[in-house]
Image (cartoon, rainbow, N blue to C red; front, top):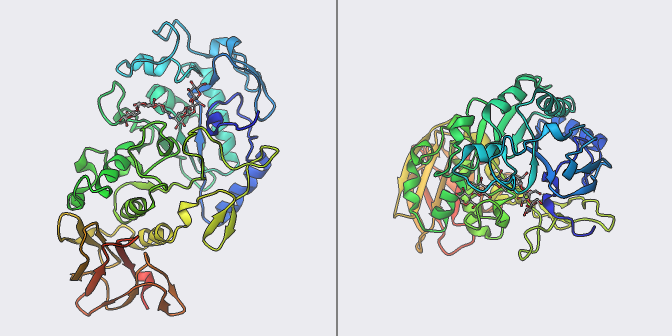
Amino acid sequence: MTNRPWYERYQPVSYKLITRSGTEQQFKDMVKRCNAKGVRIYVDAVFNHMTRMGSIGKGSGGSYFDTDNFYFPGVPFGATDFNDESSCPTLDGRIHDYQNAVEIRNCQLEGLVDLKLGKDYVRSKVADYLNHLIDLGVAGFRVDAAKHMWPRDIAAILEKVKNVSMGGRPFVYQEVIDTGGEAVQGSEYLSTGRIANFKYGLELAQVFRRQNALKWLKNFGADWGMWSSGDVVNFIDNHDNQRGHGCAGSVLTHWEPKPYKLATAFMLAWPYGIVRIMSSYEYNREDNSEGPPHNSDESIKSVTINGMVCGNGWSCEHRWRQIYNMVAFRNMAGDAEVTNWWKGTDYQIAFSRGDKAFIAFNLEIVDINQSLMTGLPAGQYCDVISGNLESGSCTGASVTVDGSGRANIHVCSHCEDPMLAIHIACGY
Ligand code: AAO
């Protein structure tokens, strides 16, 4: 089959680790190399369901499957391991009503055969899979479709899961799309891990599209009806909503680079929750099922890297200077609180992170040209949005902080990146 959709990854037929991206050995090697550099790997684990009804064949790892007979010898799972008409109340076995929690948990999401996770055998098979990943060195999991599983089942599975090799419990964050108004709420899942915070990207898209004033971000976080900082994983977009699956079109993505860079920089500068950066591939926007760049044998193309730019069809937002440098900003800011909050007009703000970092945003049609309190020690600093500190000088704009912590801040208005950011590691 050619043009295999990206979402085939969400249709498991076994827990073998063989995909178009490589073999288990290659995965293990990658995890090992990442861990050696302090980069942790979190696996997107799909265990609410197996593949879709009405399909039969072999998976990417060679396992035979036959969904009409609920036959998955690669695990193995059989007919009694799935929810059926005795547990799912809908006539066709699929989820239709998001106001009905039993339907959401016991029926099929998009026609994907739904595992009976109340059964100890099924829980054990899932736990074996997660434990195997831990043996390979992973640090935790994104729990796919958590909303479609009973919280008690997720808890029972995680109880069977071992500590990670770097020590402690696996880091778990759960995909529960909760923007309000449905029978299942994210708060039901707080005892088993963090929640993927879908409200976050929707709110910031409005602000950075100038539909809601920047100045309101002063208390962005739990005060906006989102979970507390310790309960969330935040993101501007994800693999679903960037292509119209999930939250159709209302979030910012790499296709709108200007507001996307601004929103991502704000996310990285703002001390709320754990944040996740998206990194994408280029696809035909007319076809939201288009899979990643691949070779003629369908294996996934490697990411080629030239300086900070990727090739072979990979967008690599995480290497864009305005995003990459803001990760260092977040690391430098650490747990310093927001101080020196300043607002000019509705769409001009600035703030410090204690005496570690300072950032200003300007969505107005006039420049910011203003003496502002940065909180930083006196010195010269490079703006990490417009450039870098290289060989003792700035390749972009520079800022002079005086002995009182003040500086003349200029942020352009009619420019590609109307923001400025400095931190203690970009001073000279
Ligand atoms: C594919 C085909 C299907 C076919 C199926 C089986 O597209 O037509 O029936 O195969 O043959 C991915 C793809 C799916 C793909 C699937 C399997 O996205 O298109 O199906 O692989 O290959 C719900 C779930 C959520 C899920 C999301 C897509 O709750 O868990 O649907 N996301 C994860 C993954 C995703 C993956 C799967 C799960 C499956 O991230 O990549 O699917 O493993 C409302 C509900 C949400 C619901 C959405 C979409 O959301 O609240 O729970 O998500 O609708 O149905 C506003 C609202 C928000 C609302 C949203 C969209 O923003 O605030 O609440 O609009 O209306």
